[in-house]
Image 1: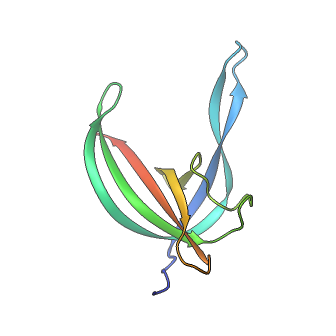
Image 2 (image 1 turned 30 degrees about the horizontal axis):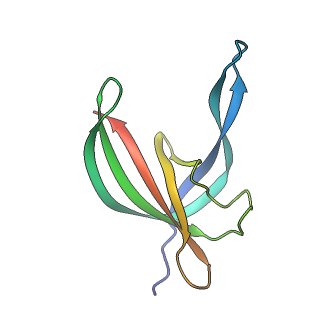
Length: 112
């Protein structure tokens, strides 16, 4: 197996619930750190959002592994940020038997 080329700098963000003062909450995103990744496109499709059509693109992002429970290990409820682009993490699996790298399956939605 060839080693991935980790050439894309991404920010890992996690959702934080913030009280809205009326008994509800809103979601803010807190940066957890920077990870270097290899990004590969998988598929794309058009979907429908609440008010506008959406372009949905799926990618795989390979990052260095971190132990389960570590704050630097991506989880499905988190997302990656690349400048203004946002990638929701759908799943995370070990890439190799030695668990040196993780493969993150992500989705980017863009209003068209």
